[in-house]
Length: 289
Image (cartoon, rainbow, N blue to C red; front, side, top):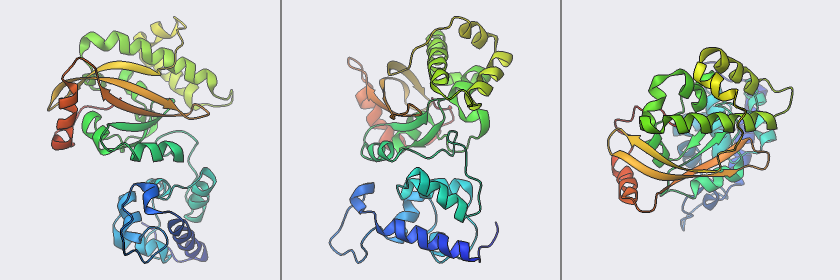
């Protein structure tokens, strides 16, 4: 990694400090405590929220150390509840290219992130309209697998569903036809809402039409329907089959969705979801959707 030493990196440290000091612990789900000596978050709390070491974050605020990666900038933006403009400014200060609006490094809508972190006992995640997971809470990772390392077209679960057999291990084979039709109808609805100049959705659709006959046949049906709620059977590699309701909350522009999973009525899924807190993310290998 490259060392930081210019005036711009000094400004980066000052900017991080200013954003940290404006946030109350309760805003990010942390206890206030009786003996806080700083007006906002402590450095170690920001480091914890961003998945960084305390020493590394301290160096960032001093304008020293190594230049943060794009993934770290995205994590800091989420931890500090930055607006889209503030997030872009942070990329500029770090001399990193500002990522496209969508994709795995997309800026998470602050309201979505706030709701996500207020649901610690429910599996939940924020995804884009192309089914790219942006952030997952620990129970979502335990239920669906960790999606933080995927980039490019493979970051989209819809893309993997039609190009990688392993992706389908998440659902029983009897449900695959339903899931395929629902994914295609949802993708058509999402693509139509995007600007005509947008190439991310059109590029993914063109690739899927070329790579997957099943997708091409379903696309030719012209079905269109956003996935607002669904009942799913999920195969967990440790716990087994879990039947859940998958609920969606859309951002105002429709580009992001908060998904959360509740136990299906009339099943034993409530107890199985409780087991997730014990199992955690051990032995998770199935890709998430």
